[in-house]
Image (tube, rainbow over all chains, first blue to last red; front, side):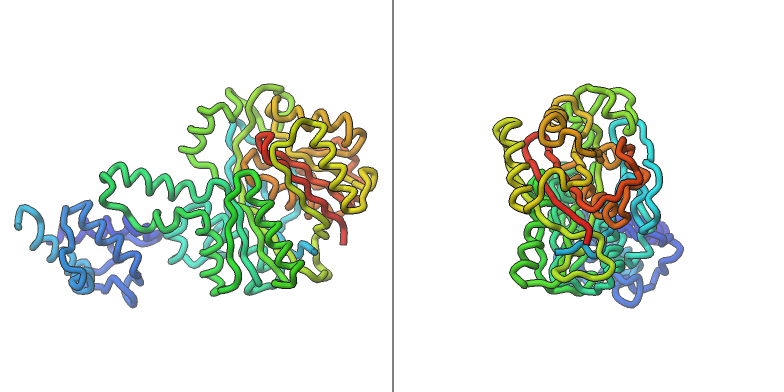
Length: 87
Length: 351
């Protein structure tokens, strides 16, 4: 899980072009949207694409979005539970 | 109408309203813009979504508005021929790479030609008239004409007008392959000596705040603008120039300086050389594309140069002119053509 969260932080920084942000600046349980990293709805779309590109996971229910993308940890948990080999 | 303020990012040191120094020399057939520290003008959170051309356009526009002391203009009008090439390239590459399935939204959203005008509007919270013109070699002139009409019809008191075009690695490779640019090592300062085919690639972001009423800090008066498409030979070009001047009750002898769009391409420069023997004979003439390179909206750089020359009353050091630098310059005619197809004339004078 720790390795996955570390990879996710690097991928989020690259995908969203978060200049001046390092992986260690993002806490495992820090909110990604609004008060945390300050991400917005366009970033949410980018994160959906990231899940598909990097982990071949399609978010089946859009209403799950806020829960899945709440923190790096919730994203990692969703990936672990939904990766094709685990399906 | 009056040019109240300017903002310009180009391959020369033109940003920041510093005194205009000597021309920056480049080797090779591509001139890239000298970019400022964008964080001074743009919130870092917004910068991350902006590609280079968007940053250049937004920063040039912000500098122009700051100089004018205008927070929200009555209209924002931009002209671009190529649009946001880097974003378009990124978006199209991903379409191919991911079999048209997984497209990242940011580069798609930012790839449209009106992105820069839209970004400026968003940053200023400006809901006023906002338009973008994409008319190849007439893109800047069309934007300017729209702004002039808004002022003339009293639909606006001030208008932010700008032109932006970038050259990317991909576009440079493609246009180079089409034979647009010079081959082999060439210095921008020597392009008029080569007498060979091709020019040098350029790019830039030039913005102007034009206003209906004069102010004490105006750069110049914008007396007229005229465009003509695919003229039928040199005689028609001469006629167009003569009738443009007549329309504005000006004789060629009233012009202190002519700025032409000579770009070093032996074929395209023939028009300027012909005019030098007829309508422009014995007139003080300078060229500008060795400073900014050739691109479809390069005429905006010429207008920036003309406005600054008139405001200073003399030629800037960066112009390698044969014209006497002591001469007071009050009236400037700009004649530019893009690939022999899109021709434009602009007339500026001291306020």
